[in-house]
Length: 143
Image (cartoon, rainbow, N blue to C red; front, side, top):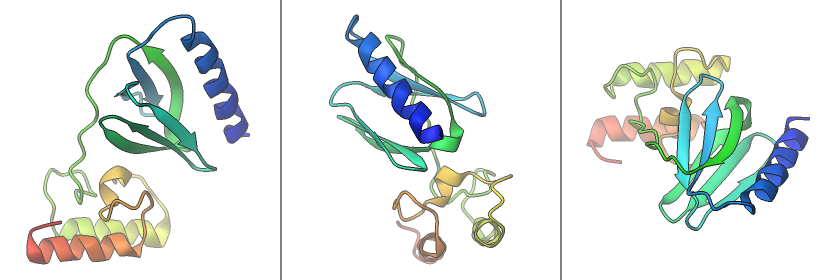
């Protein structure tokens, strides 16, 4: 159902976008944060669980479950910054983040963690490979 709604939303947005030139595609997430992506070189795809945004500046992934609204705008904004590895959102990457990541993988409970920061190997999903990447980072100091 969510996939159908997103498909219809994308089609509607594309129709309305042809009436006016916009500079940004913006998403409002369920936590009411907003992220903006330049439309230069914009490509948006999706699957059953994620929206994938690629543009001239790079790429990003947003979980469909976190998308509250999507629209074009001439007002930008700042793309969110994520400290990769700071799974518990305390501002530091430490062994506590490894523990939080393992807890998430065992329980599936996302409360109290930053899922974007948990994708330590930049694979667009969070798995045991991210635990390995995070531990490697803590031991070596580099990604």
